[in-house]
Length: 167
Image 1 (cartoon, one colour):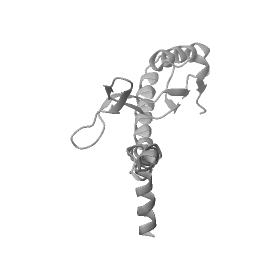
Image 2 (cartoon, rainbow, N blue to C red; image 1 turned 180 degrees about the vertical axis):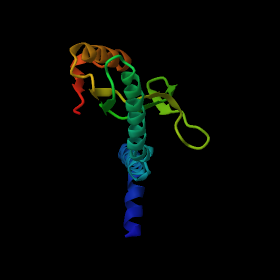
Image 3 (cartoon, one colour; image 1 turned 135 degrees about the horizontal axis):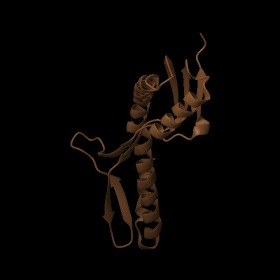
Image 4 (spheres, rainbow, N blue to C red; image 1 turned 180 degrees about the horizontal axis):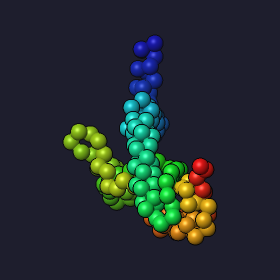
């Protein structure tokens, strides 16, 4: 078996078969790169498992701050707020660009510990807001609360619901 493989490789190394050898070696190199990407533990999976907890903390803090603020609006009274988030926190990593004569390659900037350098972290986007308060039945109070929430969170008024708290 080894002798047969060796004789085939020796045959490929001859002048007329050098192009085949180059293609074969290139394909083998690409296969190795692909396999290394598949079997390397990804940072994305670790970040994805930690993200929901961070999103919940962010959402809860935002709800509490908004609830406290709305409770100070005249006529609002006791207030409860619920916020839904459209997506999780997004991290944009810094890129390093290497330019050659015919191609350009971009890679992430890595720190000494092997992690990528975060360039920007975008907070989760608010999808909708529900406000339940004692004064929610008053159209004027509901309109002021809707305007306040829309201005603070950049959410359109059709995604803000203000309702009266039941007694």
